[in-house]
Length: 329
Image (cartoon, rainbow, N blue to C red):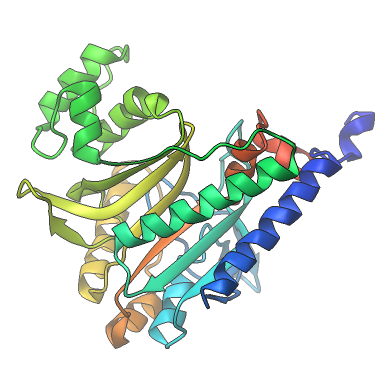
């Protein structure tokens, strides 16, 4: 430990901006009659996503998991009749540390009844654009309207890689990886992994210059989104991701309502976890019971508040917008 290790990472001007941003978020949803809710930080079931590892702890001999998202608990509230809700809270993900990652971070998550993914994208754009103007004024930075783009997953792959991600086979995607990236003898085991490599390494770095929404993901990456057909007759997941100046900011879904389909996706996630050498996770039966009772039609999105502030304040590292980063916790 050095003499400076007890000091906060962020300066007090940045902490003032964080307080302003938090207040703006709450006012944004208050004006729209969206209820703020709290959910447990400790949960009996972690998320099943093979790409997310939760932090765990023991209490009276039983394992609990620090939430990586309030999603499961919020959907139980929705099924119980809460109406439109949002959460502004700390979440945790093991192993995520770097310029854009901190193990503990602040997530804004909200659900809007009766909206689909495209309607929710519009609301998210409103929130980010208004926040950008506010933080610019408070920071004495030049104010300029954010450029907002809406592009399908298919469009960005064809534009940047000249390949249709929905129709391409795994060998074709592997050939595309070999053409654009130097990964030696590495071979992808499934189509989803190949698509993740291509979009993260070849496409996301080019999504600079404003707020970019990518929607209609491949069906194999549906996560908790419902499936549908696009205008080309291809089966797609009604989910979207959002990038601000090339940095991933949010992930949203037109939410799946079918409890049995959700159970099958939990099982598939566990199978993928085992294939990747990861432990299986327990299935959240309370979430499934809530969905069986009737999850209302809704769209939901989770946004990284620290990343939003990082971008809007022109910081270079996520530690610059945190009171105390993981290394000084």
